[in-house]
Length: 276
Image 1 (tube, rainbow, N blue to C red):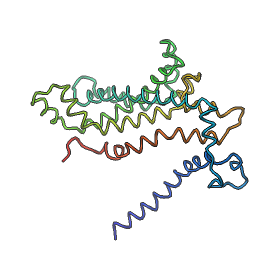
Image 2 (spheres, one colour):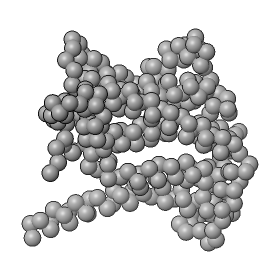
Image 3 (cartoon, helix red, strand yellow):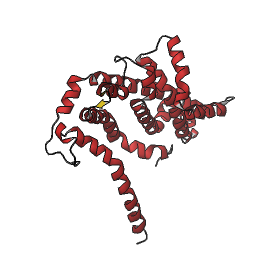
């Protein structure tokens, strides 16, 4: 009896919060399939009287949505691969090797992540202009790494600290090199944390807006976050049906990623280095 009451209380608190959070998403989806005549009725209608996919067709055929979508995929994947490659090696270095300034370096990494993004825009822009990368996809990848890398490095450092060093020592006693022990022992143990960090990094890069707005002003390098607003909002007139359809399609990659990797998000950072 005592266990049921806390569960009931948790459900009474959790479900209203879930409904509040899910309502805008459900409204976005329903609005995207409503005919244009039903969008501005005097009495709001929850369910559409008839379903149409005209708005999706118009977004795909009459706007550069697919180009922006491709740019966002390139940016998110490139940023994720580079960040994970550097952060895995950096986190391993901070946890396993002993050298002067190691803790100071870790604190600086955290401090860099805590800096507001707006503080870094001006120096980043000037640096990118000097090296000739301004207004390109490469400039956004470099900008995204400036905030995603400290975040990923700090997460992986905490996760790798939970992997017992005895596992590597045992492997090296058996004849493995330091690199061999890292590849064969550490990486498999750290894989859930790496996948979770990669997922978070992908989401950060996919949803980033401020850097994309300031650093890029051409359609060739514009991602979805700024491209959708640019193509659907003009002269204070917002095409809500197209905006909702584009927003639904923007959410599809994230929904797919969460569906496949949800178990890593809920279990990886609490897992230890030894199981069984």
